Length: 238
Length: 238
DNA sequence: GCAAAAGTGTTAATCTTACACCCATGC
DNA sequence: GCATGGGTGTAAGATTAACACTTTTGC
Image 1 (cartoon, protein in one colour):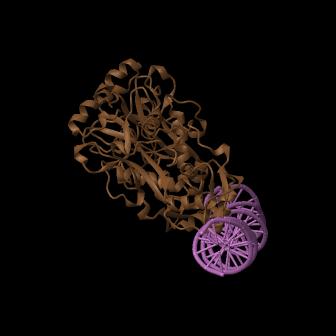
Image 2 (spheres, helix red, strand yellow; image 1 turned 180 degrees about the horizontal axis):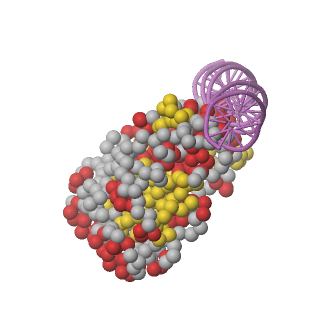
Image 3 (tube, protein in one colour; image 1 turned 135 degrees about the vertical axis):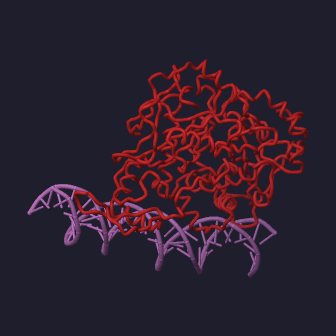
């Protein structure tokens, strides 16, 4: 932009000078994490592009002109999982020129945590599947980079903010919670230290209920305190 | 996107179905921090839109179809400050529908730290000025929100990563460094504890030089170790 | 000698880590 | 009674926070 172009002008006039630039599309890509069999999973779909035939990709879609970024992400999530009230957080925007073979598409990555037992997704159709994060070698586009970036963010978050709970059902034992943390961080944790740390955070409500149907001593059940439950209205304007 | 649209198709075909969506523009906005007179400053320009007449805004520009997001940010920085090798980090992307009066513009915010004494910007022209961060009440667009978001990120970063040094000249005393930290965090720090903490990080090189031209006892001068100096090649593919 | 900031160490409090035993349940 | 995990405390080490005196320089 030259100095000349910086002079005062109306929004309408500016719009005209912008027209050249309206040939970049923007998408959102959602790294949807789930948890099952003591493993952190991510929801992937077979790429629908010939260029990436055989590869999986994250769930994403172009942002519509009349929706903001978060709405687009929630839409992708709702379309794919049938879930509405989910944890969603923006992580990073990826804008390399050649990242999409169809043209210039800049994508904003979000990560989401859902209770894998609650969604109503039609996994059998449309090649939608849960994949163990640790087993993922290659993805379409730059989606492996996006996944790694989101995984790092998730790991950075879980000790500070009560977000990992979104991967579990409403009622859970401390063992189950610890196993979620271990799956996310991909390390073993000390049971006593873990329980102390969680107790200090004061995130949990003791339900005065016990696990059932176990072949060992049942543990107490807890729930995340109401004030920490994810609600769809989140921090920053998109 | 319906299920039908999810069938395998070539990139070329997909491009056609995308055309509807190429009416969103993307911009970058740079929160350029500087430091002077023990205050954290940010570089602002008088808004060139009638809608925001009298208000200041961040420095930004639309992203060109042939440049990635980081290149666009570096371009904005170079155009405005004449500086090339600066610290720049992506923070967040803001995509509310009505955030820009000229149309749908999604913006990715970067923050940058520069040595205010080194840039060669023509402050007198084009209403470009340094403003004390603490004095900023209202900005054009959603730029106050963007500024706050970047300031928070900066505050979260400085104890973990050697970035605050970018605000200072190459040689500095520990007092100057502490004053930078105090300006960023907007709190007073304990001198002994601050020096201990910085010493532990092992970021600094003792230059065996002293301050000069002071009306009190001069302090030793230090420089950031070479391996921590900002180079333009940065982490993630933008 | 006075003003201004440099330089420096100890103690208490907090947090983190490592580690082991008895208990309740299902089989 | 045995296998499995539940539940719990303590001690050592590391980190953080609070705090004061002597030294060097310019004037």
